Length: 258
Image (tube, rainbow, N blue to C red; front, side, top):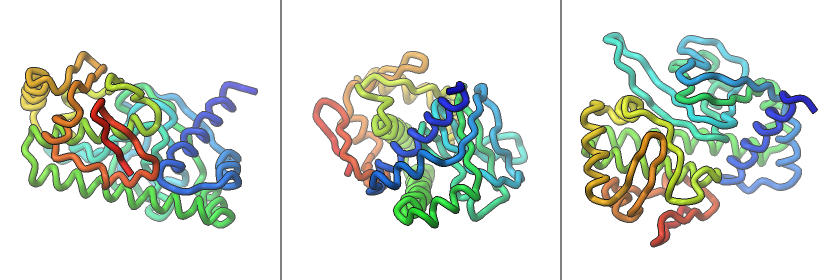
């Protein structure tokens, strides 16, 4: 088996793992997903994978790494509108909306799988459970976007920072990438600021405050959550909007996501 085949298998496994979190798939559904034709590509950090205005005929699945979706405005500023972890399908909406209205880019070196739209449509027709799971994925993407809007519109800078860190911790834990309270979060303060609508100076100050208060410690790309309940309270974090079917426990005092 070639390296490309191994990478494609990794992409299929990542997709199955993600859909199992939110939907009740059976063995036949999983087997059908593992037969999807997938091509893979490694990209360096800060590379646009799909650009605003592109006409696309395939969907991307993140195999490993970290990616984001963003919009640029005329004065050169950037607003990040989503972060994505392995297993996510960032442009699933392109099944219906073929012209991209935003950019999809890597924030770290990443591996991306590409699935032709035709293959996804055939899978949806033959496996209704998978079709429902993919539809649910787009609904959850919308739920996350609504939660981000609430944060940008009504939460303080400190609260929205805590909320985003809680969200990413839960999403990484769900796909097996944060088995302890120490996990890899390869986002710069500039990227956090662009997602949170804050300045880099404010993000730095907030992270220092969290450290002084004993909530977390951040050393480059390594984030240690020292007091999960306090961080969740600081962010007014309620994980229900993530709509995960599998219970996930966070912190020594235990928090479940159902």
